[in-house]
Length: 28
Image 1 (tube, one colour):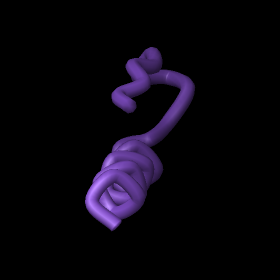
Image 2 (image 1 turned 180 degrees about the vertical axis):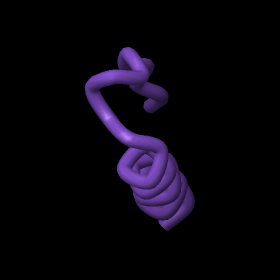
Image 3 (image 1 turned 180 degrees about the horizontal axis):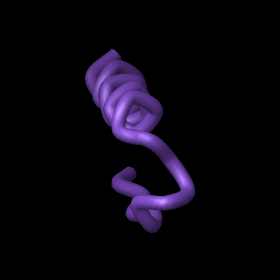
Image 4 (image 1 turned 45 degrees about the vertical axis):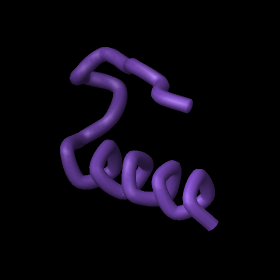
């Protein structure tokens, strides 16, 4: 699942963590 959000709602670090976590659960 890819969730798109406005740049103001999340900073880059939080966005990167969210993407990494999504990949971990997807491939787990």
